[in-house]
Image 1 (cartoon, one colour):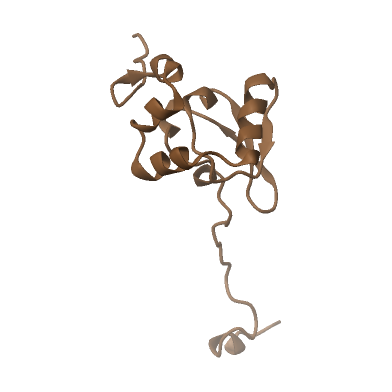
Image 2: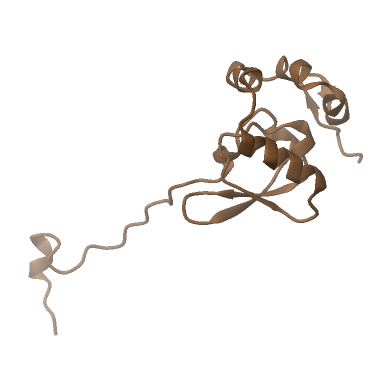
Length: 127
């Protein structure tokens, strides 16, 4: 069975890569359109430049960078506040931000309460 080609709002990834940034913005949601219209910061421009030439994953702190078609199938190391998390950019991620895929908080996993934590724990006999 042949793999179905991904389409983003009726366009393939190759067609989206050929569009200018202004034309591409029309396909994205409003928040991504506004970000593109205002222009990228210097750090985001450096990230795009490095992605074009790099062979290995590129490290970045730009969590608010919009995922563009030229980033698809690339590895990016996004900082989560403590370490860099490796993210493989998939076509389904277009129009989202890098920070959405590098979580800054861990899931809280509580264990059982310790001795002295509650009134009922004082009734446990220690032998």
